[in-house]
Amino acid sequence: MGDDGTPSLSAAQRRSLETVLALLAEERASVSSVVDDRAWKVHVEDSLTGLEVPELRQASRIADVGAGAGFPGLVLAVALPEAQVDLIESVGRKTAFISRATEAAGIGNALAVTSRSEDVARVSREAYEVVTSRAVGRLSTLAELASPLLCQDGVLVAWKGKRDAEEEQQLQNASEALAMTPEHILDVGHRAGSEHRHLHVIRKSGPTPPNLPRKSGLAKKRPLG
Image (cartoon, rainbow, N blue to C red; front, side, top):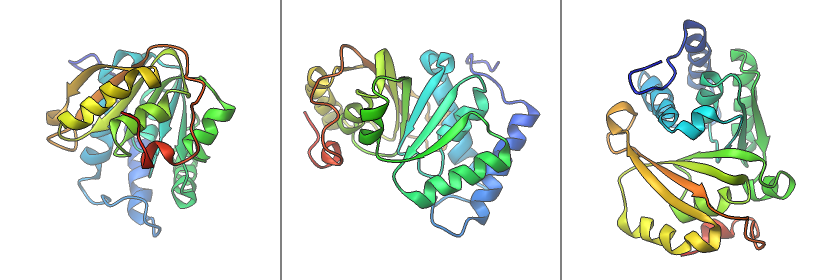
């Protein structure tokens, strides 16, 4: 364990993630803008900051929404081998990369899901203890997408940059309608790939509202709050 209580990576876990980054550097399809020697800090160390949230360390089912090239989901799957991590991403070339990476790196507890999160929520309603998301959208949008995926008392961990008072107020305004309550914000910039990195922890505070999920895309186009 590290000084902050988060798990330290073993040599085998580091090799798995190095395999993922090597594949990312070779990937011809555009799945990430950072594939050079900054990638370990920008992708891996940044993703590992999520383990400072106890609920994430203890979760058995995790959904990574808007998984992109697989971060933080693949890193969390390697660091938490007892957890099942579903990486939800609507862009097929990105989930194809995630699938290749999980096979090459031997990450058996990660699954690429080519779908919008709203469609996953209709099938796997309230199935996850934690939802993660990095660089996907506004907090109120992320909270709306996470709410129908999360079980009661589950949490959303959202990787964001600089704090934005207007965005945080919008989430507060939408909190009751989404059954998602902002709980705390961790400043992890000195340990992450971005000096302004903040983790927003938002808790599922009641039953999923019956109108969620809304039609695909509405959470982003017309966020509540």
